[in-house]
Image (cartoon, rainbow, N blue to C red):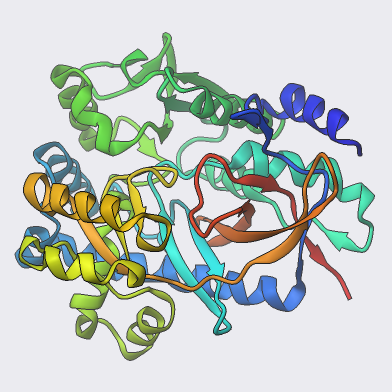
Length: 417
């Protein structure tokens, strides 16, 4: 498929509107191919971390020192408290050994061999238009490869099997001021409708609640809600609405696709927590953390000068940053800018940042979409897990080791044989 046709099909069939940013095309007609062995390895890692979420969340609910470690803002502490109470009442349950919600685990290949997991996306894990659209449109042109993406099938199966509802209505909440979030809401609505679900989309404040906790979106009753509005932004919503939302949820008026206590996994302090409290976990879980999680600590103002000296060995990450925003990579930053960033963080908001060791990721050669010329690109491979099952793979390629909105989105197909 030529690039022009691909862009047109993505735009009209999969709601991918931002195929160009900063004057450059951000999608490719060339797929990124993984071997079956590579795919199986990535899937095994993702499922292992999906299982690690459960004991981590349970520790938060059970241990005051864990809650002190995360230092969540008040609105997030309330959300965690409501979910903890729902679990105590049996309204939110753990399905099997995995987490049960939707997550995407972002991994990079390393120069030393193997993989490192850099991000755990449980709150607003996007990429659906790119992941589903690119692979669907290109799979027929690559008969020697298969499409691993069953994200929407897994989600639909889970929703249709929800106890008490034969054909539930799903409400998708998203930040309506962001086109990239609207893309996800629209593609979810379209593709889930094809799978037999009724889907209504809207802003959080379009959701209203009856006295018995039942929820409606634009006047239509919704039994299940897919919250694609960042939980870190809930403090920007009207307080009365947030109280009503949490109260109705605690009453059992609706279920969430991804429980609220996922928010500590999205928080970038999670890597520091796993390392600092590693001995609280089983031997297998400790080995998982040591092998795949780059060593991470909370930012300490008294060590700011040391961070300046260690510029090429570390990365600074804001705990609630999104899409590569507010990630300062030492090797990609001038000494002066790095020193200014470290000093600013130490002075203004040290509790909101982490310090992570640099990962020497391994680039691959990939053709530039418009010219076909080979370039060295750094892959970031996100593996979706939906209700404990692999849902698909979302790959982005970047000219630098930092993955952000300028990355090239590519279809991920699995080479057979």
